[in-house]
Image 1 (tube, helix red, strand yellow):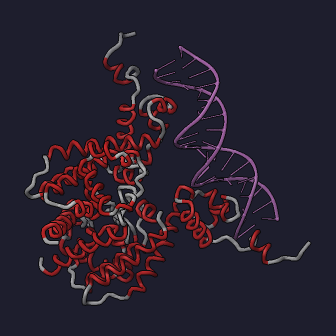
Image 2: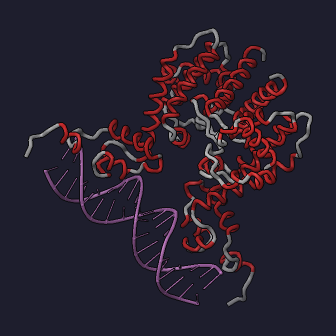
Image 3: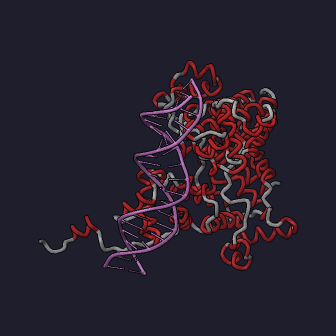
Length: 232
Length: 232
DNA sequence: ACCTGAACACCGTTCAAGT
DNA sequence: ACCTGAACACCGTTCAAGT
């Protein structure tokens, strides 16, 4: 009846051809919105208004999609890090710190990214490139190759801006909720918690400030590395 | 024909009734031998000479099996750590270090354990108990609750004896194999590698000694924590 | 009480067929 | 060239039925 309108294009969106780029962007969108568990080939196809089997013309397999996700995220990381600036001889700590915190912001936008990154069996060239940059900063700061290598191990995934927390930051469990039972089983943690609650009564047990803890740990490590570099 | 013999019992093993314990032990065996990917309910049943559906009388679900795996491994960790000895006021670093390295040995026996541990959504009471012990050592060593809490964050999963390495220790990739191409793309890493090869010609690029790197990082962190504890 | 066969609702993926 | 329907080989899990 009515001629083709922009609204039609919006709702049907029949024209834009599929592409690897579009597939990966949709995959990121699903993971961001509904988590990694929601990312299936069928759901991904649905997001693109297409049948599942059509995806295989643009990505080889689901593994390839996951590799693509790493590519996308690391691309964002590299862009964020490049804005911080180039390595400079003086004060490697300041610049490395800034780069790591910039990378961290990307991972905070994509909470699923650490898990998929660590799950990959093959190491993406972009991850290697990122670490090459870290070593570059360290070398410019006066590190031997040997100590730079060790620094990579000490920083671990923290060099990319994330750590895999063993405790869920959301302690909704009954164990934690019942202070009496907990005090008996875990006296030290109970004491720790009790004092945290005392110091910050309205903290509602969300007493782990991720950003603060991350920076505290990062600074402690950077300090230790500088000590090794300067003194031995 | 022949009467029942021990050999029969060995091969058929028809008597021993299924139990949660036996299911979990079989699950550990499969994961140790063939990796986490090989651990399916059907394969697990097969290992026990039973149908898959029989498992559900002893474990609620596959998630419950994974929780059980954590239980088993953490049980071994607690046993290993208990042998090290109790917290003592003097020299918290020595005792914490020994406990962490003891825990590490368990994880080296079960390479899959870090992944399943980090994958769990609910935190096992045994993990909490382990960290309670860590805090106990720190407290005995003169840490405030606040700094002990921070120490947990700095150590992260290293407190349990493992770190999730981002690089696969096995660099069989073409990228790494071609030094010329690598030197161009990743000059800093190439230089690092070149020197490592120079220093250790027969190292065949296995230049990351996991145990050495782990202890180096651990000591750097413990030193930083002691500095914070003593001085501020 | 403990085990089972058949079945269901999901996966990722292949393949021959459509346009 | 790009997309699809039907199908295959796997999952975890349910349920009614066997002993």
